[in-house]
Length: 225
Image 1 (cartoon, helix red, strand yellow):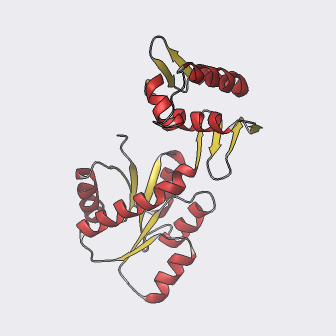
Image 2 (cartoon, rainbow, N blue to C red; image 1 turned 120 degrees about the vertical axis):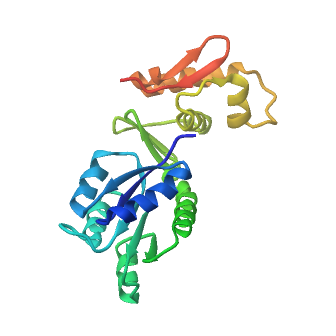
């Protein structure tokens, strides 16, 4: 399973290390920033950050400003840390789009539990719209665009592309594809997959090359430079 990246932002090195140690044990990759400006730079530099733990009181740029800046471009989950614990601070945080609010001092185990809970909740919205290799797939709107241009897909073509994208780099047998896209109660011929893949590739243009044929087995979706 792919390791998720978390950005830990706090001007106290001991606090960053404490949180990092607990999250690393749980299998997360933790990036650190010691002030708000560094946090913003890191966030926009690394496109794979899935959650931010953000201290309010920091030099150069406080947590509120960091949150405002990031919220203009991203809905990444944000947990705010503060030493104050005042109600108006919490309300301000939620107005800015903070997902969770934790007052210092706190139990690192509780923080980790909150992180895991938020990631579980947000996983649905995170996967609603996916962009990879110039292909944007929006589950909620049931739309696909290739290099910004919409393409018309049938229901099964859409389901097939979704399954491929969600399993990037994994070799998928025809049987596995049938089971997941056409469900276990489908008794048709596996060649129906080949027909759908052929149509899908055609509609995707050059991006259709991302769907690789694995002779004698099935297919693999792989984005190539």
